[in-house]
Image 1 (cartoon, rainbow, N blue to C red):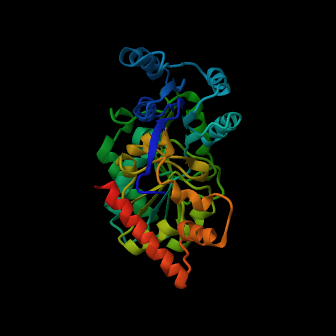
Image 2: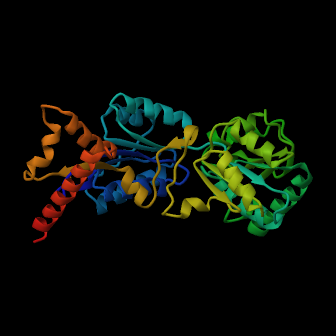
Length: 397
């Protein structure tokens, strides 16, 4: 390196990106990565989820009206169409969905060494400390859990709390749900339905053998499942083995924060961790002793809304991240650039043969920051200072 050299990072588009959207928030989970990929200069193949077919049709209709249909084509279809797309060579694949399908996407990408961003899911735990304001904590948990009928990847999946407050938690959530939706939740205009019959039946199966403290009503004809609270849930039960993705809230009782940490760490790394406590030391401890894609303390979901925070999973809940400038970074290649001058060739002579001990000493100084502090070393350092002073004088004269 000399004073005339230029060093910088050049961010360039990756090329052609495949964005595979999810059905639970079918518009935003396509548009957010799409905007980031466009901002970074990429062409994008857009594959909306076939489950949310009406939104998929709308995207296919609207997107060509505003951006180039050849650079940003919308491909609609089901599993067969997605499988065919994954056979093609892309420069990046961005997938939002289940961990099971995420593995299929990653396997297909590996054939072309294509990098992937996988926004998956998992069982996001919610620890409630017995010293906190249960009224506020339960209101926030109820909002995040039953938002979109529980079909949110970062919804609190289950509650961990002390046995002594379990009944209070149930009563506070029940009270909140009545505030939100009235006495007859089925008639509430603000309470959604399960996406389709397949997911409805899966959720009903998860209820089998559980102790229902509240809710539990279902209507297959309208895919309605009431907000449901389950108590004294066994960690070994079926509902604790898979992501719920619906309005069923299990409560698992534990005896201490230590047990909660152990419980969380015995399972796959979740997309989010939620904890409610007045003890900031405990909050920081739980953050440092567990792993998750993101954390919100004394609230739920809200870390997702902050564009300065990267959003993504870890381990089984995904890889890579996006949102805000992090989307731009995800869809860019950071290219290291060094532009040198053809002048000052004398500085480069230490790297050319024939080699000598003096050249080795200089190399150690430049590359390893080691310097011979003997008499000759001090003389060499003084000469180096004189040379640098002369170069600076010439460069700025």
